[in-house]
Structures are given as C-alpha cells and as structure tokens.
Image (cartoon, rainbow, N blue to C red; front, side, top):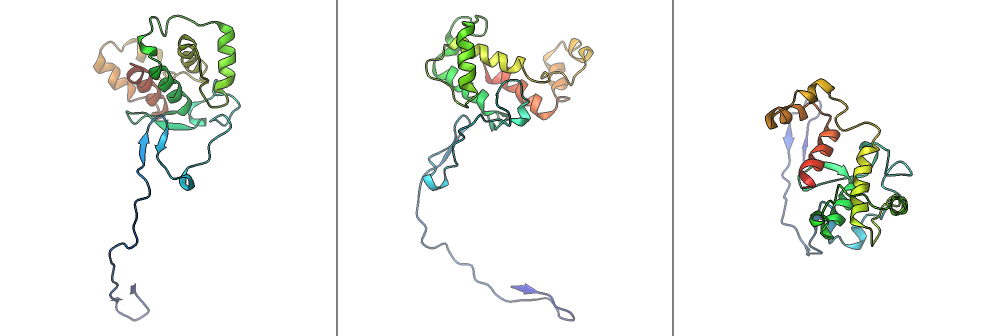
Length: 187
C-alpha cells in the first residue's frame, strides 16, 4: 500500500495479488433486448414489476422519458412496453398479415387490451390488427410528437435520404431513438 505523510517521501510496500480461488460457474447469462437478462440465478433476478412500467397509471399519453426503457437491437433506448408489443407482433407473424398497420380492429377489443397493457403485460389472444393499432395509438398519444422539436419548414424541405439523416441529428436523443425504432425496427 502507498502512503504519503508530512515530511516523508512516497513509500510503497509490496502487495501480492494472486489468482482467483474457489471460482465456480453458476450460470450462463445472456441479454435479450425484449426480455432483459436471461438465465440469471434466482437470487440475482430483479423483482418483477406488478404495476405498469411507468410513473403514470397508463402507458398511453405519457412521455417516453417517464417510462421504463430497454434497448432494442439497434441500441435505441425505447419504452419496454413498445418492445414487448413489437416482440409479440413478430412472434405471431404480424408483419406477414395483410394491412397490419392499415386495417383497424374492433374498438371494444382495443379498450379491453389497452387496460391489459396498462398492467405491463401483453395479453394472450390479442388480435394482431388491434396490437398494431395500439402501437400507432401509443405514438399518437405522446404528449409531444416525435418531430415536434423540428420546424415545419425543416421537415418540408427534407427531400433526400441524406437530408433526412442530417435532420434527425437535431432531434433530442429520446425522439431520435423512437423515430429510428419506428422506421427501422418495425420493418
């Protein structure tokens, strides 16, 4: 250990660092952007949220910053509920369904499933058109739009892919992540 005292020169004593002892392999842990850490031992498993992953009682109409977020496969920090809806849509073959983001589901279904989403989980048996509609509703009900920090003139004069790429750099990080997720992650 090294020490410096008043009027003393710096002196260091030798400290031996050895190899780790009594090491054992407990588990193999991987990270899934939709589910978080997979394979954690029970004692390291975080407590599961029983409430909505938000500071609010609803996952709709609140800012992305106030919600529990996870990273998508592109590294974007996106609300976990969006990633859960995306994973369910993918696993059920939703992107192969004709008109998936165009055809609206029955409104009574949407009300029921919206309530279920507010508990933080994706209900089994959800109609894929309803799920796609809820993803659209989530974006529609944000307190401020993803592009609101840009002027209408900036957006209207963006005609090429290069101009759009430059314009995205002016977005706040959370809005840029949501836009990237919506455009590239949902394809």
